[in-house]
Amino acid sequence: MDEFLTISNETKLFRFAQSSIVCVEADGNYCSFTLSDASKFGFTMQIGMVEKLMAYQFKEKGVNFIRVGRSLIVNRNFIQSVEPAKKLLVMFCGSNNTGNELYVYKNDDNSVLKEKDAIKKKIPQDYTVRNEFRTIKLSASTEALKDLKEELEKNFML
Amino acid sequence: MSETINDDEIRVIGQKPTMTPKKKRTLILIGVVLTIVLLVVILFLVLRQNNDTKAIEQNIEKQITNTENAEESQTTVFEADVSRSTIDATSQKALTVSNTTVDGIKLRLFIPGNVSVELSLYDTTLVNDSSVVFLTQAANVRGDNHKIIGDFVYKSNTALSKGAPKSAKGFCAILGQTVILGKDDTATTPYLDSALHKKGYFFRQTIYVKGGAAMTFTDEAKSYRRAICSLNETSNQLLVIESVDKVTMQEFANALSNYQVVNAVGLMGSFILDEWYREENGKLVTLFTNNNPPHSNRNYLIFRAK
Image (cartoon, rainbow over all chains, first blue to last red; front, side, top):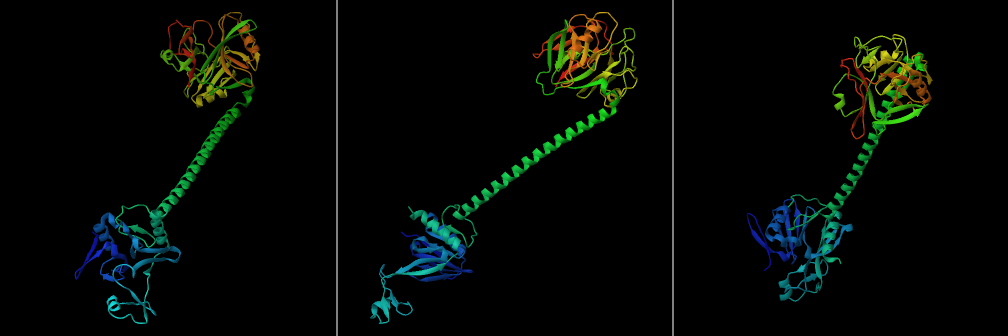
């Protein structure tokens, strides 16, 4: 069974499957979870606390998550590319060929048509179905991304 | 887990803290820098120590030169009459005893090595003092009142005995490691003053050889003769020479002169005296024993191993 991260505050409690968390971005005292289906959840919680909760609840399974600088936690399984020189970190974030949901993109601004509407209704002319992964672009310092690249290379380089 | 993290660092969550590559690089860099600094400091200290040692050596040499210059300036008038001997402190052996024959006169040589030369008053503990490698009597003492004949200075600012008798025109002054032998029949010789001033040693005795030339003696009596001598002018080797057989003073003086002795000042003669030396293995070799009743003015020339 998948591990879950339980986040709770005064008003709500959420449980996120470990394998669904793509990244956590900090913004002052807030943090935003991005999940594999591209959905986002915001909490009034510092990212340091999220890191502690992950370490506490995931134990050694938390190694999938890497704190990158002060503002970012990423799931290494969702990393598509690391480009330290460009300070660019690209994460996979949902796809239209996995799972049961269909993603339909609007041609002019890449906005997604709601899945239900796409299935129930005939796909509008200005929307197309693209069989490709969606990604999100994150930014971090060159040094941090160099270290991240080296960390990932430990497991993948011959 | 560390609370803080910088923007240029990463941390794997749930993993025991390990050194990041950046920290490794930083630590290696710090290690290299510290090693270099340490080497520079060590090099600096070694160089400084060498300089200090050189400075100390130069200072000591300067002091010795100054002392010698001061002594020389005091004794310009008498320089032709004295010889100055310094003990060879580099020699491993404290004392070398050997025999030789000069003009048919058998001589026993006591050659000091790494020793200090001292005078001593009557002391029964000297025979058990393993540092003393040679002992013989030095200045003559009158038989009637046991007074030392001539000036005698023993580690003091005041002379134990005073006077410059006709029979003892030679003198031996011991100033630190320098032994000065010569002839001076005036009442106040600068070397006597130096010995008093420096709390050294000084005694008067017969002069056998002066400036390489044997003195003239008329006394035909034969006895065992002894002298403290300085050898040729180049080596300035100090040694004690005694006749193995009874000889006249003239025979002894001639033999010393022919043995290339520059200056020779007598030590107490005859066979009624204390004289012994210690072999390298510590064995005591007694040559003569003075069986007369001892008294406080019986005095000795001793070589003490360092």
